[in-house]
Length: 131
Image (cartoon, rainbow, N blue to C red; front, side, top):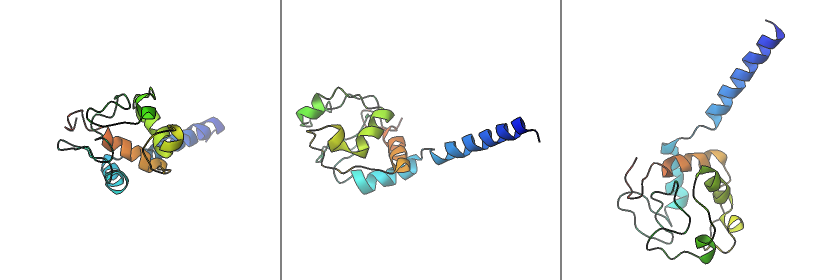
């Protein structure tokens, strides 16, 4: 096999294996949610305010805007709109990313857990229905 062909095959294999390594799994994300998020947050059609707001409709929602939850000024004034990139950064270290937040959570460091969690959360529309 010629050198450039070997290089092309290696690139394709690497790209395929990298994609599989970061693939998001909503079912696994549900387990992450239950383990780490559900003590303070709820999600789904019957979601209620707990220590934190329900996470229904989080994808595309402005931070600090869930009706009926008393957010910190830091959260209300953050200017964040939740999308995967912002969520990934925030959930690793909430108190460092948003000084003054009342979300007393050390964060999630595992990339797969974060991706899976986001895949689970983004399934839910504003009323808690799965999209």
